[in-house]
Length: 280
Image 1 (tube, rainbow, N blue to C red):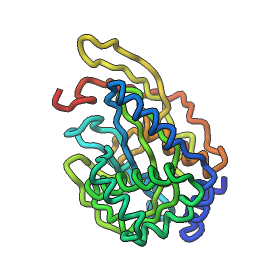
Image 2: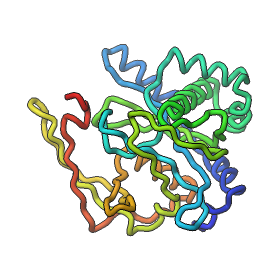
Image 3: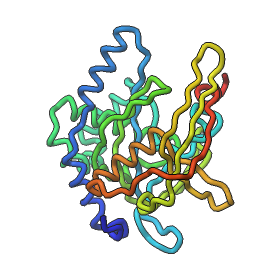
Image 4: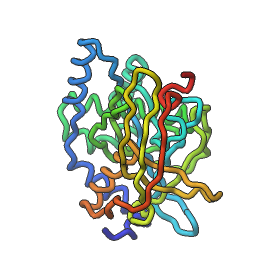
């Protein structure tokens, strides 16, 4: 892939929208599975997250970046890097989703129109619902004004393993600069150039062990990760669901030309009960 495309401020959003328009969504099928599991007593949750793009100057070069958050120690999965977003709030999000459909939030409706026209009514409705969830949470977490975003498309759902939760990701562009207003759930915002993911030297293998207390079987497994220097001699580690969602997005827009994420460098991480429940 020609990485200079990430520097093309006007061309890149349309390129992404066209690529995502070809991606089939599993929202209707996955939502139906979750609802059936709830009838059988499952506590499975649904979440909407926004993979947020912005055009920024980073280290003297202007290009598109991912704007991600690092979760604070006050919430579950503290220290993880994730997309802004959170759990579906059916009552509130259905109301805001209706406003989006009705055109009251007209700027958002205009930007989504090209994508949702190709979907059936139920998928269309779920897409608006999780877009609403993701943007509501992004407003709460980092102060993103939902009226200043451009919706580019959606990605297939992603289900977590340690948590009974499915993520429904949407891709948006922040059309105006804004000052971050971080909630207590967010330690900081990371702005990672898209080109950073195309350098194989930035990858490592994360060796994960779990220590979740009595009555739980300890696990150990390895997974690819991205190593992000924080500028102060330390590293932030992108792994898990967010790593996979971003990699899926980049595979789609690059036609699979991402470098291999395999690496001889190995990092270690231990997940304790505080990872799941900070008050535990």
